[in-house]
Length: 226
Image 1 (cartoon, one colour):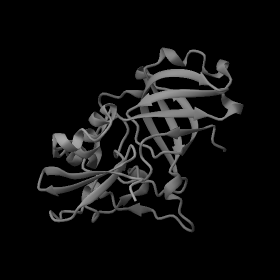
Image 2 (cartoon, helix red, strand yellow):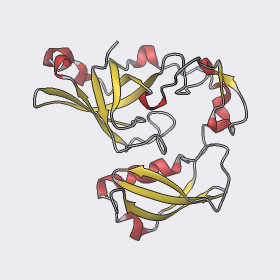
Image 3 (cartoon, rainbow, N blue to C red):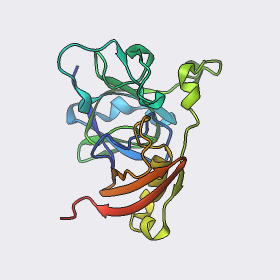
Image 4 (cartoon, helix red, strand yellow):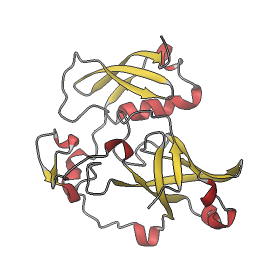
């Protein structure tokens, strides 16, 4: 296989990415196709769908050598082991990811096709291998069980983002910034109230602390600041 496109997002690193697609609808990205796959007829009819599946590579989690049959899901505290095929861990025999995102539009810019999407959970520059329409009749199972993820499904933090700091972000990035912080970017086993964490997002370093269920933003600094 070879990539057919690369997605551009506001995340230069993995830290802070939502653990699943669709958790923060305000997060936007652009899937830019390589010229060889940008033929307009290849996208005919795609605009009729509200959501699409993206099949992509965990390119920042490539692992050399043998794969491990078990992993420690961070949301379980990093202590319990689960079978790799019972998780969505990036450390897999084949490092493929699957995301359902909202399709905002299709455009053709400079000979390249671009899908404008939201609800993303991918780093900037992530290679995309395929795109498929999300079909509710086949893809939605209302009677599906949640497995062990039921215990972490509703985990969110209360976010205190002082207005003076929030206003340092572009207006169209503020909802997304609050959304990713609500999802608790920390590893599941981290509970140090004095530790200052940082998320690189949209050209800024968002620094914060967490006490119990309260996240407080401490500073917002441009990433390119000397």
